[in-house]
Amino acid sequence: MELLDSGAPDSSVQEALSRELAAIVGRFTPIDGEHPTAIPSLTFHRYSAPSKEESAFTKVALIFAAQGAKIVTAGNASYNYDTKHCLVTSVDMPVIGRVTQASPEKPYLCFAFEIDMRQVADIVASRDLPPPDEAPTGLGISLSKLSEDLLEAAYRLARLLDTPKHIPTLAPLIEQEILYRLLMSSQGMRLRHALVADSRAFKVSKAVEWIKGHYDAPMRIEELASHVNMSVSSLHQHFKDATALSPLQYQKRLRLLEARRLLIKRASDVGVVASAVGYDNLSQFHREYKRLFGAPPIQDAVRLRADSH
Image 1: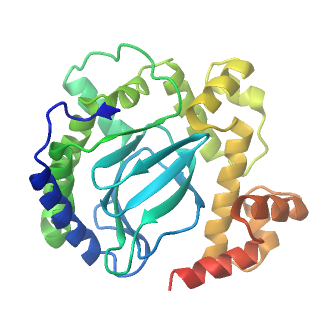
Image 2: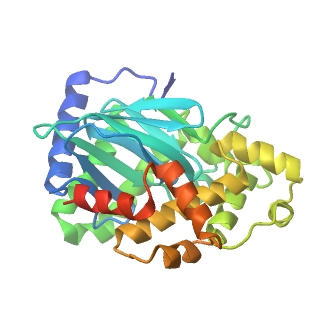
């Protein structure tokens, strides 16, 4: 397994940091669910019981548990993370997640730090880091041990939430430290390779951004391939290698997840929602929605609203 830090961390120090971080996350997550914070890059999640599998999209991010544990599946691979292991994703990608360790007394508390690739590029350029030696293979997601240094920086970032006046000045500095530590680790290889112009990772990232910007429109795969300067067959292969989905499947997943988000916000007209995310055929929308989420649109949205209260 890849390590973020080759030195063996002091387990007592790391456990103390995890407890302190869990206390902060707990204060800012009064109920179960997702909780954006006053630091735009930082989101917390709380669940008071193990969950069933749920489809979601993860952005380019560093994710770990301050308390509890979760399993995430992408394609045919599964990744178990907790207070000692973290996920790093180098491309926005669909996943299926399930909280495995949580209780009312010790809820699952998640620290999710969204990685801004523009900041990553600035650090790489300013530090004159050498280009990555070789292209990472497989999915754009990896699991490793969470180093004490990285956990300590994450704790300091979260602690700023208790002193909001310091956030504008200090948060960018700590964010840069987190990104620098990731870049200098074996996990950083994928992030650095995504910045290499004309690399496979760079082109897949461009394709992802294009799909996100046109998810509600009909897709012409030839147009997308031309946009990223790849052949159709090469695009299909490398895109699926990185995200576990073909470009068309990726677009469909985006559409359905956006439809779910709209329905949870109490948009009750399923036809309007289906049209808004690019579906012309309402029956097809119902069928594909139920296949992904396990229930028809309205029924699923009602359950999710109830779960969040």
